[in-house]
Length: 192
Image (cartoon, rainbow, N blue to C red):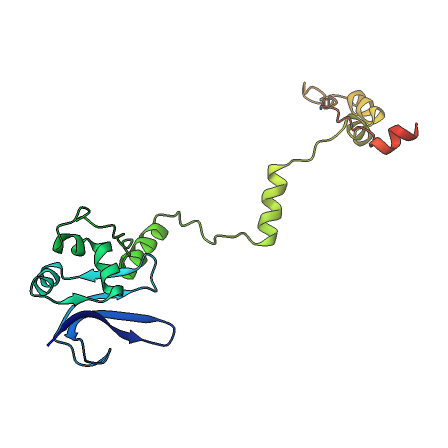
């Protein structure tokens, strides 16, 4: 009886998964196997290759022949080089990235959410946002507006009223603010 190390196909139409099996060479691809020694999933990136190295070495030692596809996989894992005493016994197999358990990720997200300040809603209502914007940017009055609001005649009239009980008349002083000089647009300058 001739023994082969071959692939047994599993999975759906476009998502293949393979088992690396020891089987009779005359048997069908998916027929009964002598022993399962690994698995191969080409759909993931990098491909998943798991091999029971000890059992592969045993079967290759007693004369089992790997198929071409399995030989390529065994060269990646380094088992082919071990069996034939070739350099490169460590193989070139890339490991899959570590997957975080969904429950652990969820608990971490909840813990992070609990660390945030409990100021209420995360977004402000429209009126609250407008009030906050008004506080952040107060209205700057120009000297012309201040003069219009407090005419000099009214200030003089208030100052000329008789004082009661030694109270000093308070004359509002004009508010000094920075004048905002706006540049004329480039089109107006070009027209002049």
